[in-house]
Image 1 (spheres, rainbow, N blue to C red):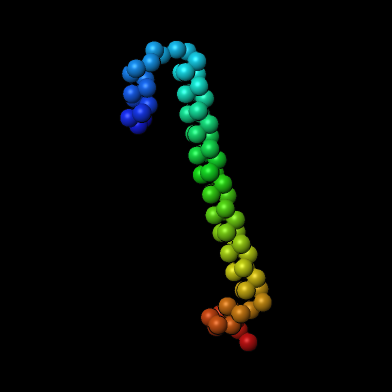
Image 2 (cartoon, helix red, strand yellow):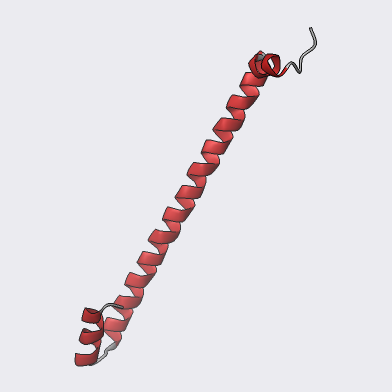
Length: 73
């Protein structure tokens, strides 16, 4: 809580509408932050899956296997 909010709350009488509005705003902010975190997690999961697919594909065509001498022949 910054100084303006503290000053506003000290000078004005508290009523139920102000409390309800502040709780709604806090809820929206928490939801936005949680959504941002979840989206970031999904993004990283997608990146990891794409890396796994790329590595599988490189092994399947034999590039990495040939470089590591893990293939016979």
